[in-house]
Length: 635
Image (cartoon, rainbow, N blue to C red; front, side, top):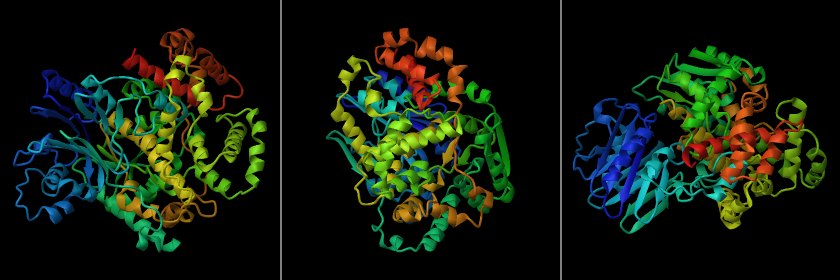
């Protein structure tokens, strides 16, 4: 796990480019605290910041060059089948390896097999390989977007980096992408491949790029499969599918236990992390496990379930008990690290979990990915019910005017129920695609646009916004029901929210996080199974639960699912009120900045303090994150 950067200058590198690469390494220091170095020749410079995981000796340092000195690589990630690939494809090449790292294996696979080898990799990665003789740079990103890579080009240069803050060292143009901002104000994150800057994009998962004098060739090497595309996998009975899923997950976890540094696992007490721990404990007795509890929010505290799992599998368990003050005290550390607007408030808890975990281990396994693949969210069950209501959905849509005027809030059981009914009724009046998009966000498109000044509304292009949205929704072909929703979640929620959150917060603490559910064999198998295996008789993640029901404590299966709600509303009405009203969202600052409509912002703040706050706390949080970022990078 590391950070990388690079620049390709069409008319040859300048001295300032070398300085810029060195600055990128400073920006990536937390991603790679163990070593920072760079390579440069006439037109290409590559930088690397290393977090040592495999072969921690100096032999594993990067940039790494092959023995012919023709090829140079910078690599971020882990390849879990690199030893098998080396034995299968490189054993007869008479290679004198200088390290035991996966990096060197990748380098020689490219040397002997060209770009084809990317499809053989099982792991998570972003890398760049420079071929001096052909004068090309080959870039690839893993299938699901576990590791980030930002990309910029203009008439003179191509630049890339693991983080936006590093990319900014190349003096790139910083023009805000109005359509991306519009999407951010709805979702609280920016959908890939867009970024907050118009000329910067995210290299898409499952994509490879070849950069040469002829231009940039972009190819997709991976797409999610559909039921029926793999005949063998599509012929499983439900019981057989459960058994096969268990086998594949066991192999995935075993692969991800390879490490030359201390390793552990997150254990929330939910099904997903408990499954991972149950499998890890088979292969690594007394594995370190880590949970966070919420002393001030007992409704969200799941530590008793985590401790049941830890006791059952005899793990070396640590619980970090947090107060709301603990969360608040780390708030500005997180805001300072974020280099592109990103406002998933649960990142605060993830940051603290990673910070505490890093004190004992360098690598942690997590349960991310299961909800998006196997229908674990409330919206999955709601969508399923709507699709099967038929004409009764019209009756639901008719109650929207009533629920629309009732108090809605996440802070109480009754008001939260009204909020959920209101969203359900709103979704009933929409088509499958529009319902999905609306349920992913906190506000509709029209009310979001009204938050901008007339000047910024004039910069907004509805066609470009529609293209952004359709890029996400293109997986809906109308034929696969819930599986369409799950594929959309893989490309939107997982890629642009959940994986970003874990990557940012773990890297801010120099911790590598591995995600066994996102093993390519596991994902491919799950997506070739029918939706009825994932949501079965109203039971979400049915196939996963039934596969491991006999292994996990029964208490885990007999309770409602809930995530963690950061107490934003309390903060906004208390500790952060001055920051909102007299600083970042004050009328004077809003007017001077010129992006947001002052009256719309004041109306949102007024709603925040009413008895009908709705989603205003999440929307205010999105605004605060943006304003803090804007002050730091653009003011």
